[in-house]
Image (tube, rainbow, N blue to C red; front, side, top):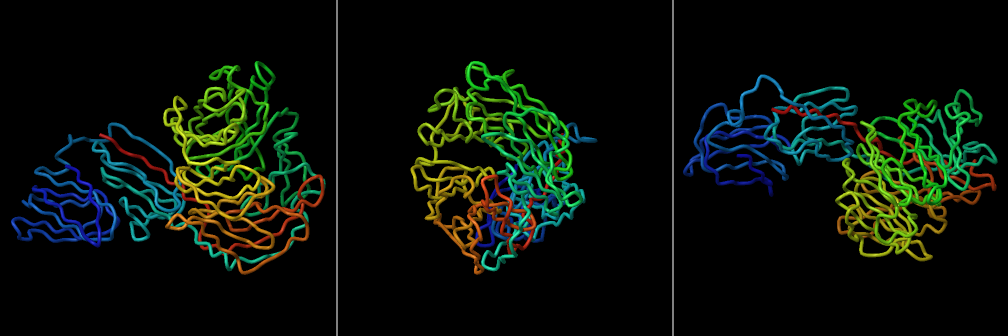
Length: 518
């Protein structure tokens, strides 16, 4: 049988009779001692996938190693003999996961014969408690692990010392003067920039490149109409997606709505149509009111959430399947509108969260919107979903104090920092629970400490911007941070440039997993 235990203070002891032992999952190399009637019959070091090659009766198992979860087989027959002998896998199951820190790749599956793993960045592979001492899998390599238990991957998250971050200088041409631009994308090599409007007049992205350093209309979107649009980057597919909404008035404003999804694989230089969604095929017009036309996009795993005021769409960026829910179907949501603050958390569209603009409460559903329950225990003004677990919000009312959650909205920590001007003053998510923002001349990180308290760190270097500026900004994966300035009524075109003291890479590893099943 498969047994799950936890190593505490360096060891765990299990009273179990058997003659065969296999180590399925562990955080690294462990020492296994098998005893019978108080006498040690085997004492050896083992790593994941190892088994004893002959029957040895025992009635007690002692495992010594690093603290954490451990999984093993102990029984009167070997683990291999316990399942049918096969000549090859009868089925396979594939997945892609983002790894930045510790991520479980597979759960225990008795029908599995092996797991093949490939990664685009160096990671460590091991059991549930793997860390930097596990089995190193180099970028671009594929390796097979003959395990039926939990398999996990670990990539050391970037270490940020905000205290040593440095102000570089003022950039005068980040935007062209007078551009109708409020949104910004900059490639990590800083050779491509995109800028676009959300509301009140949506625009396709305009483009600037190092080869042609003049802001101009993007050639991929010539002669196309648009009602609303937004852009999001997907590290899982190494893509940039732009979602364009078109439609017309039906039962409600823009209740007859369609969405075209464009993909770029070259940092936004070119886009091609990736998918088309006619929302009314799955949601009746009576349930949609898109009078608030602005789009919000978020990606968790393989799922992109497209949230507008009257509809939320769950779109799978791998197989292009989709489902949707209309604004009038959820509690405390009137006129079928006010649905923008919504996110899907699972690939099957079952787990989702939304913030009602009518009663300012956060609600979660685990059955695709069939039933809802309130979470968070308070009212909110606005919310930003960084990933599956890390959220930023503002308090309800006029003071707009900052709040953070690192447990998918179940609990919240209140900060004294405020975001008085709305979204332009919201912090930027870094990684590992850290949020970055400006406060006057100060650069800060906000996080929740191990006791659930607010933690604020301030950079030693300070700089007062030359013009009215945002408290938020734009961050590249190389740690360059731009604080945008509001220098004229046309939009932002200057910025203060900072270099964060970054150890490591902000972007996660993309790990491909293939499970061979019997």
